[in-house]
Image (cartoon, rainbow, N blue to C red; front, side, top):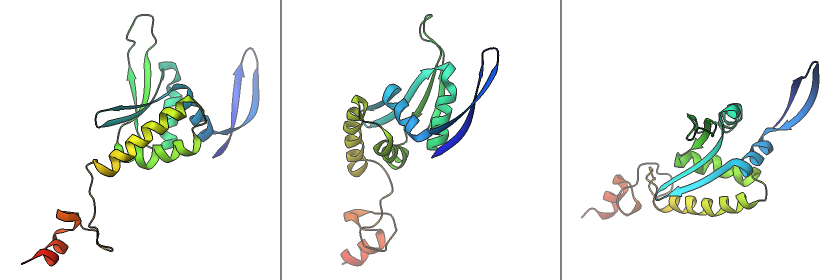
Length: 161
């Protein structure tokens, strides 16, 4: 997605500059610099933490990806800045939005290596342990899976005595 935008610099005079900005690539670079991919037990989290003055960047990330939340925190130490964090913790949002975005836009970096390890753990968790509605294994049936991978109807058809 390439967007034309105007930047106005005010240092005594106003200068208008036309920029072509690829926001997805920009966000990928921002994640490479300031992003984190965390796992604790069965919880996965993607976050970008910045100083409160950079709130528009976190809001832009939330708007561009259309997932997650922006959180504001007061400074933890007197010499720190207030903090803003864009975070995504929903497993379906991570799997269906963050993973495809990072696969396409996260540049080769140490952060990408960290991401690939986190991604592998996330997808393994999604396939094996995540609590979600799984459907019946028989083709064409969209009912909820019960015992032996079958929905209630197909289970009784097959195993009724």
